[in-house]
Length: 506
Ligand code: FRU
Image 1: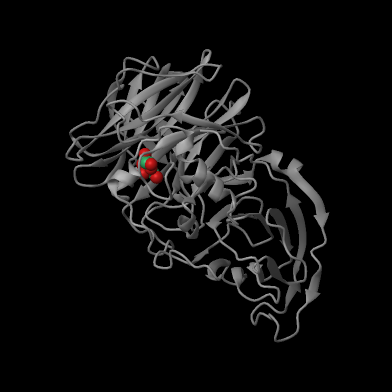
Image 2: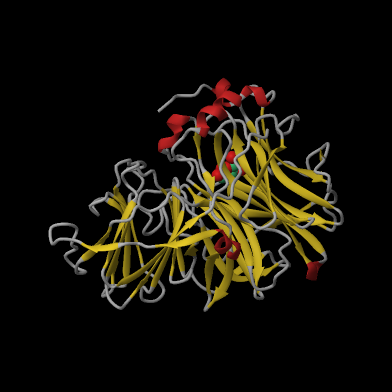
């Protein structure tokens, strides 16, 4: 793994020519995504400033141009009319002031009047590398002209640790006020969120207090990227607790969870109505953010980073890494979030393919506890959707296998235990082995259906029409593009069209 000096990581991008060669080289990568937002060069991480504005969806992400490394962060801007076809717009917010001299860190957006307003963390460091996080704001007009507010809205509080960042802006009509939630750490290193309030977007901000979430006073050491959204009259609090392990999540210390409940803005108390849930059960899912200004009381749109802090991925060698998940529609059913891929994806299906299932010989991929596997002779397209509908009982679906059905990214369902086990140990390229390579979890109901959305270096599983989801990076070799499935499944496959233009725009 390449070692980066601070100077290399925090180099300032002077112009497109600085990264043109890098872009040209990366274009040849086998793992460039076809329908997921990805960095033109370097690293993309958290989604930022996701909002519907002037008839379009605006999505930004944390971007470090130089390589797959966390260094000087820009907000890179992409825009879409349908949440699937994304055009690169170049840098949205540059680190070019005293307050954000070492990066424009994560934040959110809200449309109001004619403009789109951004709230982000100015990551300031002094000459001794001491960090001060400022909450900064900027405004973009319909022509795309962006103007930063000269001074931050507020600085950090010294009665909390230096981890105070990732402002999430929300308007609460009952209070006729805006609120900002900031991910934070207390002085005794407990994760929390701080709340600020104001009647106006760009002035009048006051500290309201610390968010109380009964039962969650000691839940991770920092809550990154808090996000609150109202769906069907309930409040959904989403955040990424870190510096702790959680049940069923291997050695990972970075998680993304949600709580459904009620947010009381007078007492600053979020009362959960049930236990926390993982937002996604996969290996690589973090810092999810809901889109602002959607204005449908029964759904929200969510995007997340496919990746985790402190983890390493094979394309780092090629000087790029990361992409964003498919936008997802969130709804509430029976006290849980149900997630489905944004419906416009289905208009990008190509003609249905014949999965060409061939019975395997007894030694040729049979699975002892679920009966015989059927091995597909057909090679899956690099970008495709695979739908498997299962009859009762245990089941297997192994994606990215070799032609003979061996290896792969294996999904096993044990019906008696109602347990799903997903493993990427069968793949040739293995990574983050010390974090986790196998995860087990229980679907809400018996397994009936898996919809897998496959792209060059990622797979997203929607289980039982979105009762649970599972997102993972995956780096199959050219030979690992087949699949195998237990004989109690009916399988359909569609190729998916390329929807990201991946143009060089800086
Ligand atoms: C989450 C995070 C945020 C921060 C950003 C910096 O991945 O650590 O808390 O603002 O990334 O890129």
